[in-house]
Image (spheres, rainbow, N blue to C red):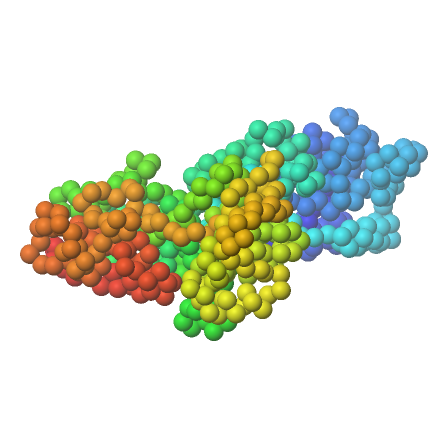
Length: 554
């Protein structure tokens, strides 16, 4: 982490060298000593230092300088670094100006030149000021900063993308953060530029698209090989497992993800039934471990990129990305998983990202502190989200159309929910309307048994109402069932048009689709078990079938 800065300014080179020499002799281990003889240079550097989230502990500036006197400079610098200590270097004749500056710019001290010997006239003063500064000093966040409105779909999308890709960031709400206001003012940004994404090099992206954020964050490297042995589409548990086994077994492996690794499992606040983790682990932690493993073994990973088509050309599969890039591969594994189904209730679309969220949306949980929130859905994902939200919200209400959770949720989760005092299950209910101004404020609920309709204040609504496969982009040569899930293996023989598509002398392998060399694993596959462990197993198994297929086509 960068050391705090002591910034020295004096237009007399000899004086500047002397003060820098004395400061470095005592403070160089704990502070960076930066100096300049130009007030203009010192002014220009402030915005750059602020945008890079550097910390200035002390300004030490001469009073008499041709372009701007020291008091004026300290007053200017206070807008950028209000917590920094301010020290004026003065000649004896300037002491009156220095005394006036104590009130004018909240001057902390003035030093009369010369200060020899420094052990008596410099260090005791600086020591005391820096000790006082250290009492309130908190090391700055080093990484990406996001400025925006809390209840904004654009801001939520950026935060969700960064969190999903395990990129640390600092959130600054423009309505409550003084730092956000200061950064916008100093850089001449307006609300039309929001959300703003700032990077460690001091640069900013204004109202960026996700692909722009990814590119700047180094998430979207170029494809390295002309031909891959296997390309995996989707980085959920099945795709990550396939990536681990593909690379470890010597295949040139590429993993493509349209949003963030981990899939729905990656957004889970707690997975407690995964083998080998007796106390459970979060979806983010599972994803972090898997990404580290898959990249260490040599799988290439590009994100966010969406696949728009798979075609066959001269015995190879040609994958077309939405940005026009084409990738050649000998085999494909589709592990695109599922998306949450949308709730068509009145008002929901208007507040999506502004109080209404699909999935756990853990990035927004802290905004629900001491308020009432609602969770729609009775599956494990809904239960895990409710348990996580109960740490922040005053009250969490789970709304389900059935009488209770017994037929849809694992017993261990039901027990945890029953033991959590600020979680309530509302059976035989459905949401009929959500309302608010610029954000969600109220939710209207219909109770089936009493035929009663009630309205309740709501800080957030989290929706888990089942899932649909992400397969709309897949061509007709890959057979899907009536719900859009990909059919594989012997199940394909039950489709009337299978014989018109499949022209191999053998039957499809267990996880193979109706297109030879294209496999499906995990939740996107028809008949899958919808469990993390099952998806991991299928992703691993798919690689063994890839080996068999590649042996055939050599």
